[in-house]
Length: 332
Picture 1 (cartoon, helix red, strand yellow):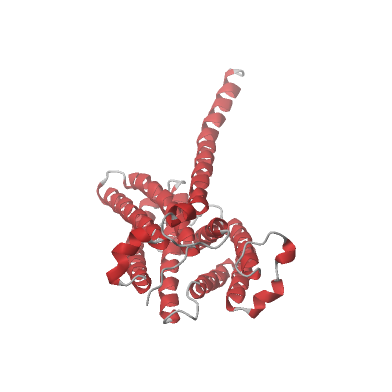
Picture 2: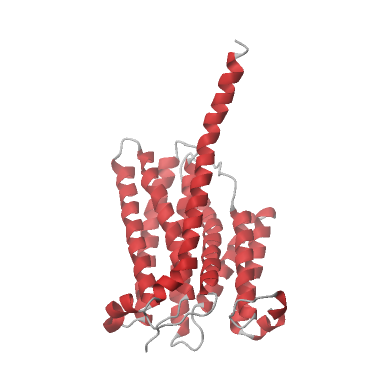
């Protein structure tokens, strides 16, 4: 008896560890595949378009995709933790926060992007080429500094007595990104910035929120289905806002008469088309999850399509990073 019990205990431990190790491997593989999109995407998107990309476009696209992903995680945690308070009987036992780690990753990505701005929007080959003081002399430089400092503050807020204050530095990142995406030389830049602000905020709530909902559901609490259902209702509104602002922003850059042509003949249009197809796939998965949530005997079976939805949303984030680094075909 004494020999059998330890053996079974070891077997049990191994059985518990294997799924965790398997998940880690899957996450690493998916992360590596997602990183290939911004790294290799520029050459494929620019092929035979006659357009030229700035040096280091792949690296810049990767940094911006990482920045977007780092923004989604803490925003999603705040959003879902607030939703959980409205669920009757929720034990309020949220999983360990990833927000400080995500803020650290975002800080590194923002620092890398700031170094590019400090060298005149070129990838620096040595630290000596980085003019930190020059960041204060330009609009893009100041916005880059805002993002660096905001992620630094976002990493410190969870360690303070009022972790909810992290909402302010996260909001600063969203505003800075919205302003950066629409320079003052653009026609009606404030309209464009407003559209990007709503689009980015809703996308962060959607992607980050779903990730955190699934993390909470790993404990298999009785209130899990109610939380997932509440999130699904809000996500439908977020998807509508994302679609409306995305279409409006696209039409501002590609007038209706040129959209079909530019979707296949410009790098920006090609990547935009790829992003639209991915978002459509996400919408189908979200609808599938909602049908399961309502009609299945076990509502938590909706987690399967929801997990697939998270994976595709990760690809959307990677494609979004690539989209921001490509030349914009503005035609007024």
